[in-house]
Image (cartoon, rainbow, N blue to C red):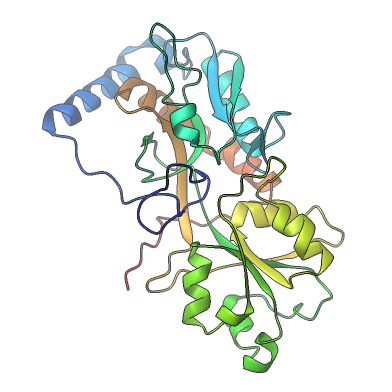
Length: 311
């Protein structure tokens, strides 16, 4: 996970595992894409009905990590699984999954993997940051932000915002142990607010077979090894509600030079304009249902475009 360009094994769900949006690919390509999209959306009876096959196939084949809640898992319990089910119903085809750990060069081994004479194992990744440069990404269907998460009843109950947290003052802040993933936006934010000594860093790419994105919360935060954590918002919202009482989630605010909020769409191979138009048609017509799914998983949602910030 880097600030500018993804490492080969970077976690695609991490908004920082991305690079700036790719530039235009030429007028001819743009014209072809627009033409194909228009034909699909306007000329096809199946498209007009909001249904059709999945990129010309009889099955919606989804690339996913088998152990990656709240996003997805091999038991189909994540919010991306529910969105995939909704998409399959819209297209009128069954949903199948190709499972592969995201920390092991995920894109190359799933969406872009193809042996001579064989087909791709899957055709869509349900959630990727807009601007992720290894694939083509649809228009966004949600925008979230990093968040603080901490147990209630441990001395931080009065904190409802980042400003209130910083207003606790140096004496109280100096006693806190703050868990964060290295090279995430939290690293720069901690440095800016003189909290580096309070940081407890965790590896972004963890190759342990039983590792999952929420174990920083389930294990170290719940046990008291750390006092709070700063993680991607959907992770914070989902794991906070596994406890009774629920842990508290405080969304982070982007600052000059520190971007915390990111938009997510669906990822596909480049050069498939009809498939992209089909997916974006689904997103346009199922906004309410998708919002309900995200709400059920306690995803912190933001309105509007991501706040891209400069130094």
